[in-house]
Image 1 (cartoon, rainbow, N blue to C red):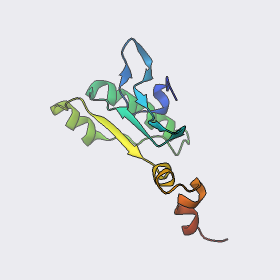
Image 2 (cartoon, rainbow, N blue to C red):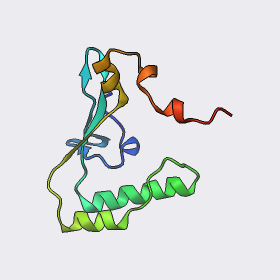
Image 3 (tube, one colour):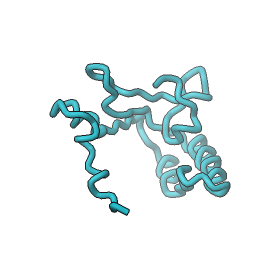
Image 4 (cartoon, rainbow, N blue to C red):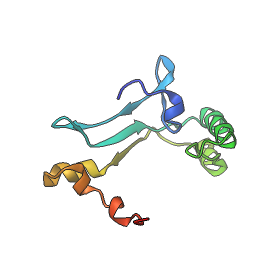
Length: 114
């Protein structure tokens, strides 16, 4: 996935030259996406505005929108060096054990039957 809109990645840094999209990446091995990564937003003013936008969406019923996090914004105001976040998904495990993704996910086993 490239050119991810800012609204879909509220903690990602905006791409230089185009403030509507973010700096995100997905490592791909053997044709499979193994996780998601992004440059973390370290501008407190921009993060404050994005949290406000997310809070408005949440108040309109979007349960996936982020809560406003005052402590996080305050921490950014004290200074945060450039950082990059990366999350590995169950796809890496499926790739390493050479199994289909359905056999590598634990959450279907934990769901109630009814």
